[in-house]
Length: 119
Image (cartoon, rainbow, N blue to C red; front, side, top):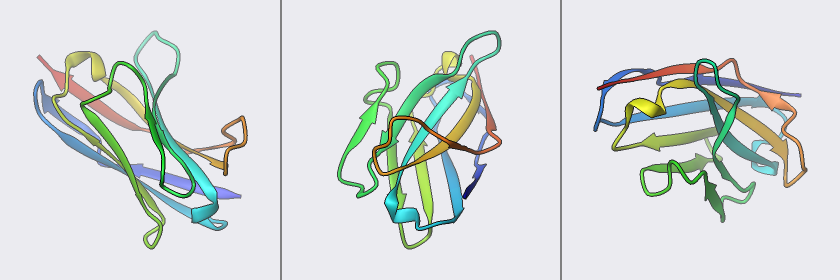
């Protein structure tokens, strides 16, 4: 079992930056791929970014490419999402997720952290 706790959300003006953190506990963190997803009010959950278990590869949703960066610190069991040039449409609840290496599904989820971008 993997437990995930997100932090770092808040209110920011458009054009600003935020860094989200997700602390993981439980099994060996370095064996898990990590991802960030978000859900805006009235919309379905959307893929934001993911990073491989080795940290060697990162992938991004089209709407955040060039503005967001995912990274991980295996010594701290933490994954980060650096968000820059934020837009009002980035508003939503951001969720951290984990899966063992490159399995197809994401069985572990955090409780989410709210990000609100004002125009």
